[in-house]
Length: 185
Image 1 (cartoon, rainbow, N blue to C red):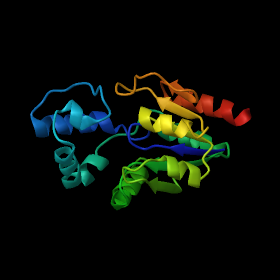
Image 2: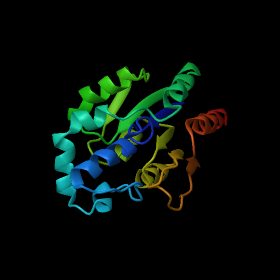
Image 3: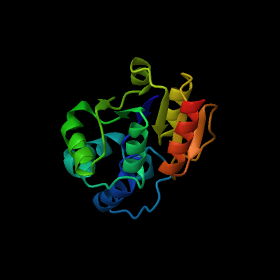
């Protein structure tokens, strides 16, 4: 099976690390991200937050640790013959820091696609992905509308109602189990 896997919030435990840096930068003490749109949580214009990320991109993309079980889950899927293709909203200019992070944490990777904040739907179609692992509910909706099953890793910011074709999973172990079921049947 050809499986698409998001990076931030799915493989890289980005949001807790970013929350810490954003609190320091904006002088806030927000402990839980209730919305994927972080600029809304911090009550700042999107452009202001985007500028902060662009100016600090290497640090912000290098500092997170992996989501527990991500490396092992990806290794297991690959050993079973599945093709894992990373599809991230990161910009193409962030390829070097992204690959360096994947290598640092020994996350197996062959193909990493950068949507640059555009919809991932076109890449899912182009690469004929058969399943997708995501954390952003809007992306999950768009991808599942293609008929591609989506596994949504549970987070504080994606607690909305799930559309058909989206399965909520709490851990990587659970996601691997569901992916195996999809592949067998």
